[in-house]
Length: 84
Image (cartoon, rainbow, N blue to C red; front, side):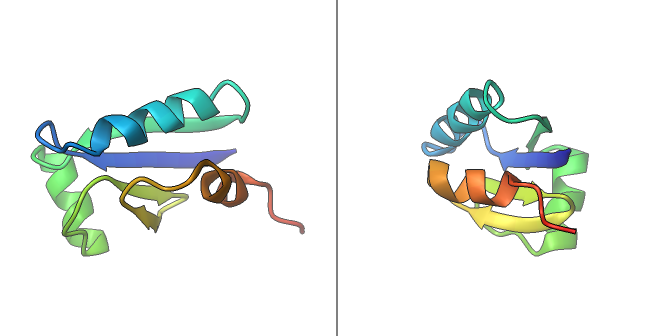
């Protein structure tokens, strides 16, 4: 199961779209999901670790995967199980 973290800001105009996208995808795909405010201590640590300078930012399985609001198709591809 994929682990998805969405880094957002309460003042970000695009962040609600990203939040809605991931919430809608949870009905179809199985993944853990959390939202982290970039202004929180955890958010600051994630931003520093991944050199994030813009939100929304999506981290999937510990890897910065998207900056901005990704397309549904891109997220579904990133969430797809990788062949072994």
